[in-house]
Length: 135
Image (cartoon, rainbow, N blue to C red; front, side):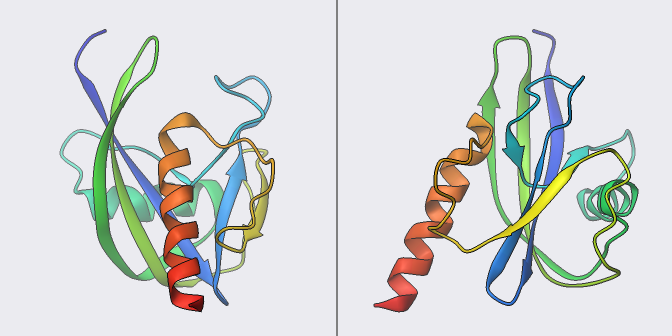
């Protein structure tokens, strides 16, 4: 493995639900679900990378976002440092440009939907947060 790849991911919220996309056929880990985002380009800020990725992938423009947490995940052939942002508001409607299936999920109600290993812990944290909020 060569270095760590910097990646941004947006937890896009609407009406108490978060957006996730399915990795399309032909990409590594096809069929798994993830938070939308992608690699940070050289010289690009994390915020600019997230805005670019959400526009490219889904035609969404974040208008209110905050960095929530960072975590490293080591896959078999690559290590990534993920920067998770809560996207509280955005403009545009979801229009997938890269063949993604997409869906809004209620935290804690993802069922048997397979998420990428790097995102599973985040999905679980969102479920715990939602359960605590309901209590």
